[in-house]
Image (cartoon, rainbow, N blue to C red; front, top):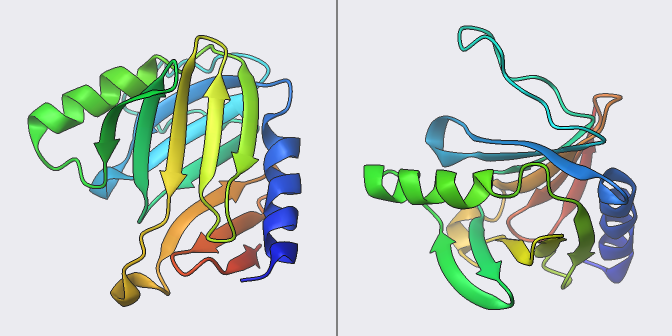
Length: 161
């Protein structure tokens, strides 16, 4: 992974989050975290229909999520199969909804991401160092055009249409 990939995904992340709110959060099948960004909160009005589509969305697949409040780590998840862990993860992530994104930074060439919100909470999305998962999708950033900027577990960046 080169610093060029890091600067490219940083630029994409900045475009997706600068001046935006966290518009929605939900957990998908297999504990995938969906974090939407836009200028307003999206409300799911029909539980039988899919979730509303945000302007931009970060999807965390094979990555750990690390929650901080006022720079103190309060929880770390890499698998939320346990019902108690699911409830805790939902509580923590739902607190992001409606909060302004204060900063979104790619922290390393491994493409860890830190997102800080207006209420003092932050989320770090960290790809695993596991050699067995190197070709798996760690996280991706979806743009309104349908383009996905995908970060693989080994830090490679791909673009999918």
